[in-house]
Length: 99
Image (tube, rainbow, N blue to C red; front, side, top):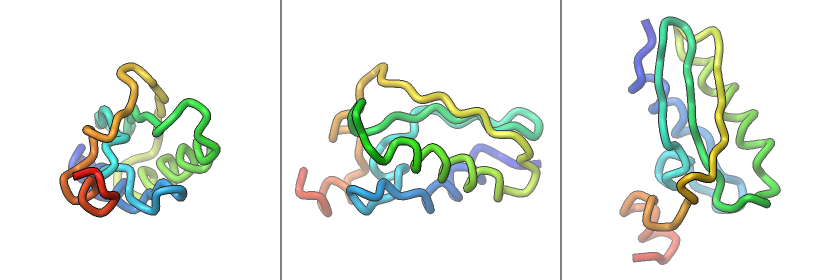
C-alpha cells in the first residue's frame, strides 16, 4: 500500500519551471494524504497568476500516479495561506538567495 512518504518522495521530481526547483523544497505542497488508492494533494503556487500553474498540476498528477498503489489523484489548489518564501527549505532559500 502506498504511503504519504512514497508520494512526497516522488513529488520531488515535480519542478516549478520558472524557479527550476522542486515543489517540495519550494514549500508549495501544503498537504499530502493517502487514503486507500487515492492521493489527496493540496498545493499552492508562488502567485495566483503563475503561468506554469496548469503544467505543475499536470506534473503533480502524473508523478503521484507513478507511486505503486495510487490509482486516483485529487488535487486542490489553494492560496490560503498564501505562499511566501519562508515556506521554502533552507537549501532552496540558499540557492535562490533568500537566506
